[in-house]
Amino acid sequence: MPFKDLSEFLNEDEPLTLPVEEGKEYTFPGAINGHDWLLLHKITDQQQDALSEDEDPVLYAEQRALSERLYGDVEKQMATDGCTNTQIKAVLATATVFYLQGREAAEAFWEIQGWALTGESPAPNRAARRHPDRATQSTRSRGSAAGTTRRKSPAAKPPDGQKSSSSGT
Image 1 (cartoon, rainbow, N blue to C red):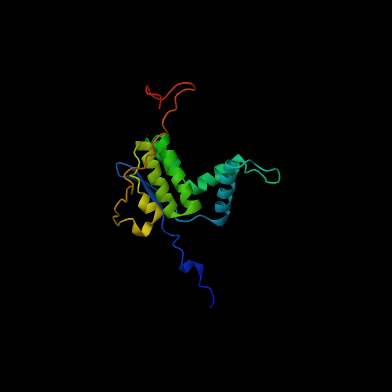
Image 2 (cartoon, helix red, strand yellow; image 1 turned 90 degrees about the vertical axis):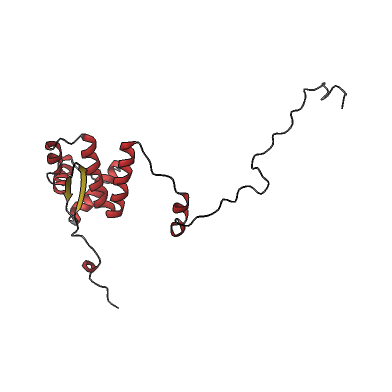
């Protein structure tokens, strides 16, 4: 069976729109060209790892040109709109995750930033992490069969030469 055309599977046309405040949204294209995507990967790899001698560093001019292609005038527009540096970083970092890892990763990243900025975190859900298909099912806690899980500490020994009781036993 021959492979289907890749364009039948991909939905690259859907742009990324990020709401910031008071109904203001910033939109990024749904896809970037392959050269820019590879350059973005190279830049992020260089930031995470030490630059090896056999690899050409990405020049600042290349990084700036890539940034302009990826983010357009969103940086300038956000500054003009009075956004803070934290808001600009959150939006641009989310767009970068979107281009590198896809929409689901960008949505998760966006939520994590929200928790970090507000100081709130989502309620832990161990069942959802361990068994996503059973996260909505309720399970009864088994508890301890012996009534306690705490170990008893060993009885303290008296110092050498002393008796443990007045009766000598």
